[in-house]
Amino acid sequence: MTVTGGTEQFHNLVESHRGILYKVGRSYCLNPDDRDDLIQEIIVQLWRSFPTYDANKSFSTWMYRIALNVAISSLRTERVRSKHIISADDRVLESVAAEAELSETTVVLYQMIERMEPLNRALMLLFLDGFSHREISDVLAISETNVSTKISRLKTAIKQEFTNEPCS
Image (cartoon, rainbow, N blue to C red):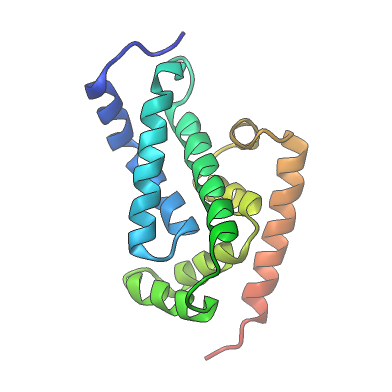
């Protein structure tokens, strides 16, 4: 069953799940202007795809799938189109300054997620947002077994990176 609702229904659904937009935006774009552009691009694609949304399924899962596809596609396009103007270290420092209200652990976790390959980044966002392995499998179009394996490996890598961090 596809959705037949209009603009208001779309707006209400996107508004109630807007946290997904910011999580994906923050994970794929450190620069606030680029992040805003990506979020707008995601919303446009959500609107274009809205007539095909099946109201019997989870809106957040559908939204994540589109948002991550747009973000990954945008990331690939940007990498091909141009080189980064500033170094990764400068981008991380800019991001940390912009996110000063976040805890130190959260900032470090975002830095780790930023360094992940696009699929692992998407997987980690979904996992941290509490999606089940089945839901992650649906969003990313990979098997549940693959999801479990990748999550296990990512947890191990993150744990190791946290324990290897020098104490201040």
